[in-house]
Amino acid sequence: MTVIVRTLPKGRLAISVSWRSRTNRFQRTDCEPLGVFIKRIKSRWKDEVKTVSILDASFNPIPHSTPLSSALVPENVLSLDKSKVKILFDPPTIEQVEIFKLPCYFIGCRLFGDVVLTKLDPGEVSYRWCSSSRKDGRFEEIASTPTLLLTEDHSGKYIRLTCHSEDVDPSHSQIVGPVTREASFEQLTRRVLPRPSCPATTRVMSYNILADSYMNSRTKPVINHFPWCPTEYQARKYREPRIAAEIAAHAPDIVCLQEVEGHAFDQVLSKMLPEYAGNLRTVIKARTKVGCCVFYRKDVYKELAYSTIELPLVYSKTGDLSQLGGELEERFPAFMKDIAIRPILSQIVVLENSEQVVVVGNTHLFWNPEYGRISLLHVHALCTSLHAITQSHPGCRILLCGDMNSTESSLVHSYLTTGSIPSDGTALMDFLSKVVTNPLSLSLARGEPSFTNYTVGFKDVIDYVLCDSSAEVVAVAPSPEDLGTFEGCPNEVFPSDHLPIIADIRY
Image 1 (cartoon, one colour):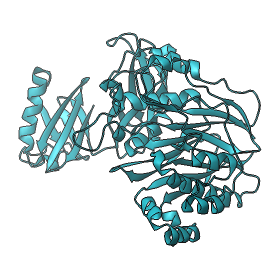
Image 2 (tube, rainbow, N blue to C red):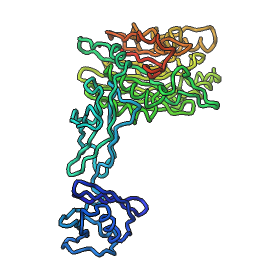
Image 3 (spheres, helix red, strand yellow):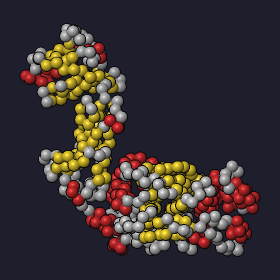
Image 4 (cartoon, one colour):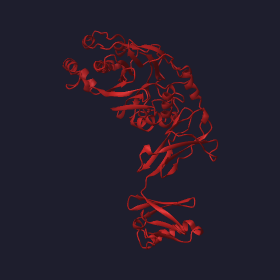
């Protein structure tokens, strides 16, 4: 039995009165006379209560003319007949618990609650997930973790989340479900590589998840870039949970993502992938903020250092490659002008586990193959920076992942796999072929899928996972066999226009 009083803006109070297994809620002005509020309580409980009053610490009645803000204070009590109900003013409270809303709840999806707390830290809250075969049936506890991974055991069930804290009333979420089993989940489980039995193996994933902002053009009239994909499968609420499910199913140790937006990182990925820590860095492209993100398993790695590389800043007068940038500016100003208007971002994360240090590079190069020389300069800056960092960590390992937007015949592919680039006889390429060489010795995750980008009109490998040449690539996930039933990606089963690369690498 309690009275909970909360202050609201503009001089209003939210009042909750719990008595005899019932709760009545009121919103009143803080200056309303106590007598008026008492009449409202009597009208709510009608014949259940005869006498209502507010008593002070000496159990003397508070005058009915007293404003509510002075009457409803912790040192007073609400008297309902012979019952004495304590008054709590702005107490610690679980204000709201809501399971993240989705079009449907499917096996393989991870659920989490949007929890609103007042005067409580998240660490003070405990969670209880319950399920029932009927929406109006009896719910039984199935988990006590902040998130819930839906499995075969939950098929057909309804799910509810309850949050608790000591001396605080519990709060229940809405009921969601029933949990469905989708054909796409069965296809996903068939694509998952079995974990290798050999020790010291790292599973790496690189995945362009397709930014929601790129589903349509930013110009008018608006152009749907993926007209073969029904609208409901283009929606964020459909695609993003399936992207998280894809990552969770493969269970990589290190994940390099591209085309990540802030809302996807904050509202979905970080919450649906609680086993991982990650860094997101965005850059403005085509009038929208998208970026790259590196996730790593918190129980395997700890982060030693994090940095970013931005084109064109790295070739500016204050950049790490200012000497090369100065020569290019002097000899090929038009080329440097092209670079200046095309921002590109890369990340470098230095990770450590019990056995080794791994330096991870993640990038998303410029999309237009006509500007391959710009992509070349960016990947050169990234590899040069990776090499410099390795000098501080003798014996460390290297991973380089990303959407390179570069096919096997490109300058970028040649640079990464052979360490050099050919000249096409032009002055610019003659110059670049002499001064732009890869300081790293890298190997592709061979056996890579036959395509990583699958759309109408284009199907090819443009995403890569590379490691230092002394490493052994144990396995690489092949291209999905069931893609041929679709005109292109994204679609009902594959939530991005790219396919993830998953590689098991042994050092």
